[in-house]
Image (cartoon, rainbow, N blue to C red; front, side, top):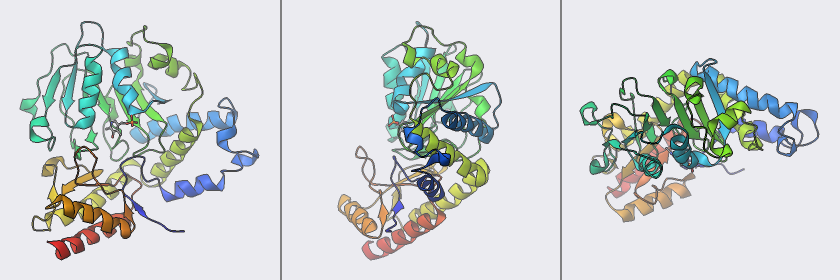
Length: 361
Ligand SMILES: *Cc1c(COP(=O)(O)O)cnc(C)c1O
């Protein structure tokens, strides 16, 4: 079997033990003579996966009965509309702290449905940093404040979340959810497409505070109401069963590997290896993000020329490191090093970077 180090941004690397576990029971799930994909979502087997995934997710974040975890479809992109449909009342305003391309999209979508003032934007610095506290202007009566915890394309991440007072806080955590400990109680709603840090594409995880859910609008179409999915334990319609099954295995894997603390320790070590290769290249590599705002999940950098970037991607691919080309909108190089990426993979990339700089610098 030919193995590669997979630095794709999403769909992305999955933990090897999870893939092996899934292969083991692919053809015969728990002696039922068929795969989980072929079973009813009302079966007791699937019910156990569905409720197990919700319980493990909440346990990892230290949350109790005041939160629900929903497994939806439509990706994080559908959440860009679903959040304001449910929680942006007529005449109200939702404040957006925009630190990259995904936050921009979330704001634009909300602005189609109501007032969505930009409370802060770092666009003028090419989304290379987080805003300072004095750059954030929040509405007094904000229905909620929205931020993107990790901007996957630009590679900037909030180390600490900005203080929004008692305004309800909502985050798109698609690319760094469960990568480190954080106080989930600060948020009324968190959403994440699974395909970066949680599992395969096709599932979108929504964490929602029950008391906040109770305030949702009653008017949106059935499938676009959080309450529909909460009332039915994410089984209102046919769920993406294989995706939730894989997600459940990934959650178990996180728990077995030290939980969020364990993930954070490893993620810090991994990111440090690659940032150190950037910082010790005598300027050959130029990191995109300001040092304090560097993402531990998506490391973005440029080389002296686009020709060298092309060569970097070609040679790294030949060396079995795939997915290193930057997003088509910004170019450069992006190494996505989600939870499932190994320290060994990051060591391999760091040493390749050192050699490449020596040869071409
Ligand atoms: C990938 C990504 C999205 C889009 O997710 P889809 O599931 O493709 O809709 C949104 N926000 C962030 C932060 C992302 O990384």
